[in-house]
Length: 255
Ligand SMILES: [Zn+2]
Image 1 (tube, protein in one colour):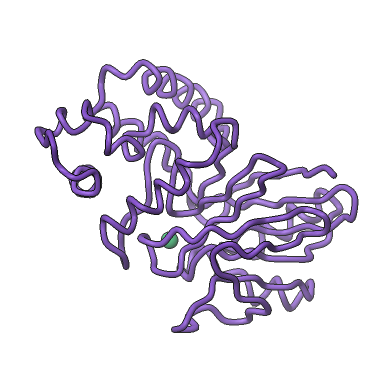
Image 2 (cartoon, rainbow, N blue to C red):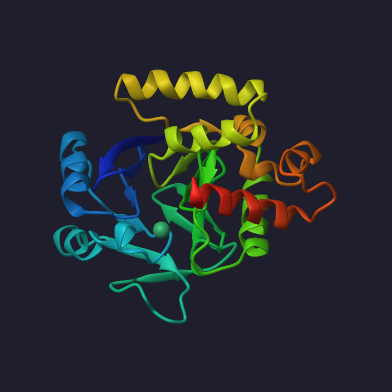
């Protein structure tokens, strides 16, 4: 059983991802920001789209679904959504469900906060997590529909994954995230090393993704809201981690 993953840009700064099972030739697109770049990536590889795994209802994640489904007849998997904000869905999933992409197994992890319907897809055997707009490299998504305790809880679920898992997120926001993180956590050597790496990758016009979860746990200040050092930097010693997280998120919104 082997998986291949391709990364490419959609829209302005969304990531397009294909995950391909070399045994069965099944291929899933993680979200569908727009059809064109996804169709082009499939053509480049000679892969046939069998599935789309949707993480949440935002337009920059589902905009290409109708066209891709019409063209490829693929199955569309989306979060269980009482409000049914996502159209063209064949299978609705909830926490703990396992989606088969050929022989690859994607486990559904509900990670609400950015939106209430947000899920991440965890491919345990491949040590891979697609976290879309919940967890970015050195950052996290804005909290639009949920609240800070809910989002913090979702980040804890992702943080509980092993250090050697690779994080694939929804947007190329890493450089901006690094700039903000250094403003609150300037003396963190792991963050400093990541900052240098990100500068180099962006100068070469390469994606900063994937990153290693172990590195995120040490360098991503949003995953460290329960670290007394981070609370101290914000003059919030003894505060609830979710409150520290909320303060970080608000400062980033204004940065
Ligand atoms: Zn979003």
